[in-house]
Image (cartoon, rainbow over all chains, first blue to last red; front, side):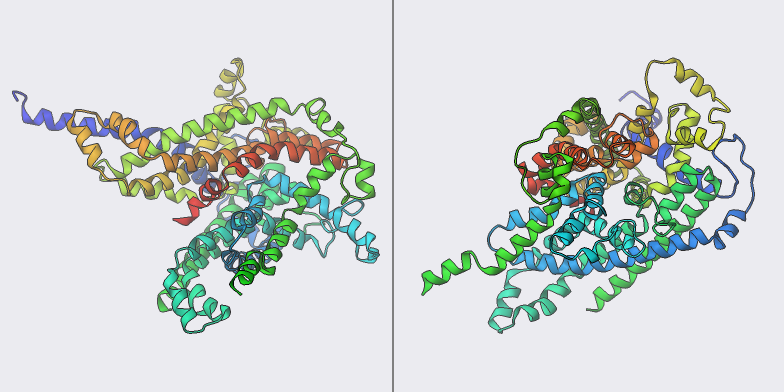
Length: 303
Length: 310
């Protein structure tokens, strides 16, 4: 009471700041220091010829970006990444939707069957990659063993490192581990559809196809947006799966952008150029995802 | 009529087809279990047959030559300390953003959540450089490949490196810990702050009236209410860190004594063609998560998809 009012205000303000510092400080320091700072440093390195070993990289302006425009490796990794991304977007938005609608119809063993489809998602990338490497192995893999056993030896091939099948091998690996995740998002959405809508459709004599096109599909659109964006991100950032399977082989066929960055930055000491590649990709991804979200949102409103 | 119908609806063809598909879907895992119990020649003969006799040599190999027990303990410790760091720092920060009358609270939340969009490849190389400058990473992937390429790996030594090198601790694991925590923060803050908006403020206000400071209020009143989120974070990051191969491989290097880096290193070294060992390795390292998954499947699925559902 006897304290002058001004000191009191200053005191409480200081206390407020101190509290914020205690509460928010650790998170801010870690995130700022080890996520934001490297991201900004990376942006700065993209204008240099830094090799990763010298202390003072030289500023070379836009040379990295000019090189990137004419780099055939970069172009082929972009092509391959886009191919995989397109496959994943189709698979993770539509195949998973079909599976979710089917799983939603189960009356018994719901948990068991769902649990089986989700299970590969909890396995390490390395585990799923090793299992797929085994399936695809030429000499002793499961697929070729099966083909030989049923007399179709002519079809046996190197599924992982053959030119023709390597892209599909990578896709199958990512699809297998991710399927459960995307399906679960649809299933959660299906559960929010009010049962009286189904009742009304049943009374009107609508078959399962009508129910899907008129009720389920429109109600699933928000998740369709989410899933297609998540599939886009999964596809563009495709990287550890390559490290533990093909490592870019055969030739440079299965270089994804992520793997190319790793190849340049960690294996070949071209950090400046690697930073340029990662920033161009990142900017493109953010741009495409933003456009995609706004387009799909607009469609949702229109329906 | 009704009885017949009832029996028919209990096991219709539809359910059985989906069950079969489900079994087919997990069949690669079943193959791994079966074949981990056979020696290599038997696997080559017929990978689909059940083992005639139990062959446990591969499992013995894992814990003797491959010395996998140590890395398993290390990975578990890493999981625990990263989760403890996350479930203290993230909810505190989320609380201060959502509840304190901080003018910048919303902006700060946006700043953290923006981190969800940053892919690892973007920060990978500068982060290694940063750790090297501090001195925490000396045996990184970069150093490992440098001599092979003829580069002078240790052409310079920072003051930090010189200082930390004297201490009897391997700081590359500290670096990995720091990286895991900062990598996990955006998602955790996103989940916690979203949940916090649904908790009523009255209890905190009455605690404040009783003279409880904001930090104490947070720990005594708010934190227990956040338990569902905390469980999600534990499941998500526990699984993620146990399973992580890539980031540990890049930050600490191929010699990292963590489960999946070790599995990768020793399998790609010389035993790559011994599928029996590979299968035993994948089975042993997937066992803990599988048991937890079977015990609480619903919690697991909920926890792992929580981030995307918002």
